[in-house]
Amino acid sequence: MNGAAHTAVVSGPVGILSEVTTYDAIGATYRQTRRPDPRIAAQIHAALGDAATVINVGAGTGSYEPPHTVLAVEPSPMMIAQRPAGSARALRAIAEAIPLADDSADAAMALLTVHHWSDLEAGIGELLRIARRRVVILTWDQTVQRGFWLLDEYLPEVAAFDDTRAVAIDRLTALLPGARTETVPVPHDCTDGFGAAFWRRPEAYLDPEVRAGMSMFDMTDEAVTRPGLARLSDGRWHERHADLLDRASLDVGYHLVIADL
Ligand SMILES: C[S@@+](CC[C@H](N)C(=O)[O-])C[C@H]1O[C@@H](n2cnc3c(N)ncnc32)[C@H](O)[C@@H]1O
Image 1 (cartoon, rainbow, N blue to C red):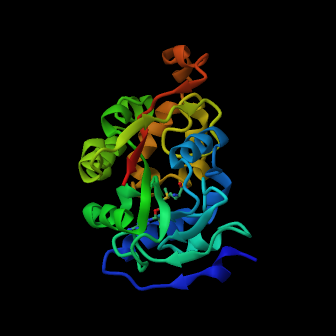
Image 2: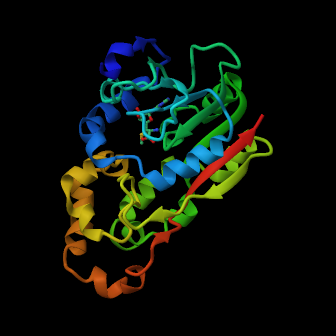
Image 3: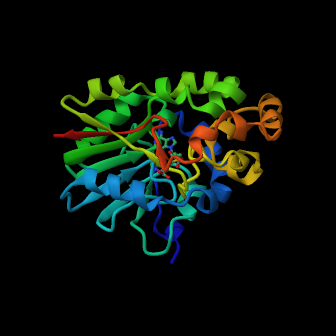
């Protein structure tokens, strides 16, 4: 049975529509290009500790959900429809207004989603309210990611766009008192095609299907990225970045933020 059959629809406040529209477009190929990476999954699952029940907020197609996930909260019907058979029930709602009781699960996790929320404080407040013991967030540090060669050398306009939406790590830790952070190194053959996943495989960014799974491309006009991508196809990347070719993993700014309640 597919995830859509498990969907409950809950109307949310204004603000839901633009993000739903974004992920209804990106979502079409998400499961092909955004396959959860097993090494990143292991780090996320370790961060969840011994939580016996988990709610995944901004859950998308269900990447990285441990088997004991009891509910997914996700606004986009397109993403919900792609949840694999047998995955946790999905509730159509936004992080800022989760229609669940206090202390609904041991842990709440929110992976690569906080930068889409229209009201970060409200969304984090909801995670703290529905979780009994732990909150785990995966996001990126834009001060590090700005130095990533794709943004720095080829697509400065996309870097500028990401500056406007990235959530600063210290803003998150201020909202989650006592939270600790962990770097999430990205393996050179990462299977999850998020923004900086292809740091050792530059040709991947020339593939429209790969780009279609990344919101930084979906939300940026093609005319803006075309010149940078044309330069990337000139073959000079390998001369400039030969030092990366023997690296197994790289810190490109991804972090877990883990809070005990
Ligand atoms: C990059 S995807 C990440 C999905 C999944 N967590 C993963 O790691 O693959 C971002 C998700 O956040 C969802 N989203 C956007 N705005 C949201 C909001 N206000 N509340 C909850 N989720 C939201 C999108 O629909 C999308 O599914």
